[in-house]
Length: 261
Image (cartoon, rainbow, N blue to C red; front, side, top):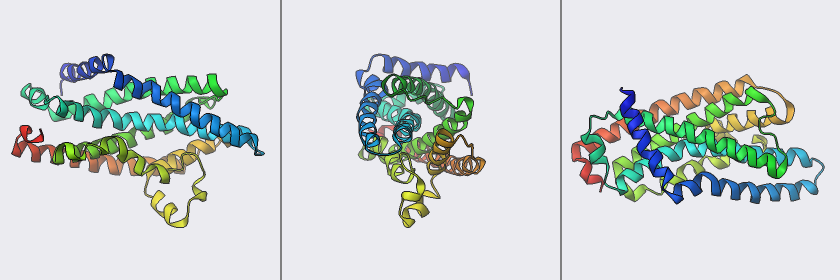
């Protein structure tokens, strides 16, 4: 891999972000709307319960952490779609660009943008609701990295579907990650799910991530079991999604990239 080629692809998408109101609203506007809406809702519910502080903390923390996961997969799937919509894939790979370099640029771009979105939403959470997302300091970092890993494997799996089947499955670019949201225990303990849903959640890394992050935020405990399970499942799914994306790309190369359009 060549760093200058990765940087060139990275720069191409950064220029797109700079001049696209849609991309900027996805990064800042919608997270703000979610924070205001769900923050006010949790504040109202908390005002009529005996545990007001914990309720607001759980909901706001869940929202902020979800942004990291969502940005991780968004930068992969939507940037692939962007090149398809603009009929730019042929131009990209007419240059001496390797598939691994293209994929690495998505990962690094998602990492940077997730960091920016995280800092922005954490600041808004403090300004609006006095919730300190980083009150536990560096102990939160493993959960953030694991959420990024989840975003990567979801993104590459959906990217493989888009590359293989074209624009007719493009809706998955925004919706696929929400399929795991009900089983991720983002705003509620895992024990509140019905038994069948808990069985599904056992195979979803985000259930361990949010459960562990919630325990850390409320009780100050860092559970190594949750971290280990989330990392193991993420590693397994990431390996599969990278293989699937690579196979999908090889298949479309046999047909010709123009067939994607």
